[in-house]
Amino acid sequence: MNKRRLLTIGLVLFVMLLVVTPAWARAVKTEFSGIVYPTGLVDLGEWFYAGNMEIWHGEIVIFAIETTDPRFTGEDLVVTLNSNFKIEPYYGREWGIWDLENDLCTWSGNWVGYHDKDDDTVYLDAVGQGDCGDKVIQVRWHAERYAPSEDPSFTITGYFIEN
Image (cartoon, rainbow, N blue to C red; front, top):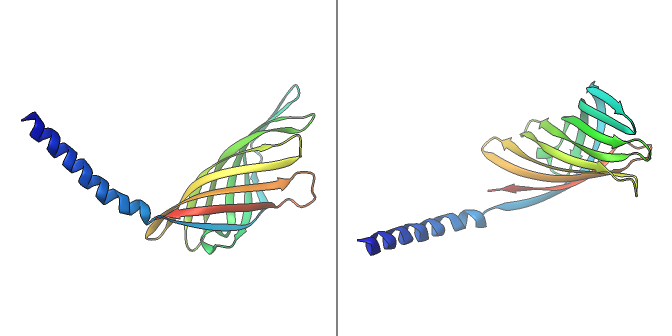
């Protein structure tokens, strides 16, 4: 009796593996690149100073994003920022959430970043999910900007994973 049950369970698991494997093979990775730049401030949030630290919580900024893929392009990339920065020299961590809506997709996700004190560059990494009508698409993107520059835009590279 136990052998038969074990054989049945093993056979069911094998069949499930055969069914699931082709789904992974159909996943498509699509890369994109572009720029992101601020267009407005919605809310300054709360700022605190403690010794040599500058702390932001809840700042909301609107960005425009222009990429090589129209699904991830739009005028209303809403980003919520939180950060803990050392003031002298200026560096530290930041994090938050983001949302983007255009005619093709509605996106949301999380991001983390840091301002590097050695090369004075801001690095951001984000993940998210988009609802694009009949598809739900995963997205990962990286943005960076040389901080002392007069140009406030970030360069962006990333990719979608869709089934």
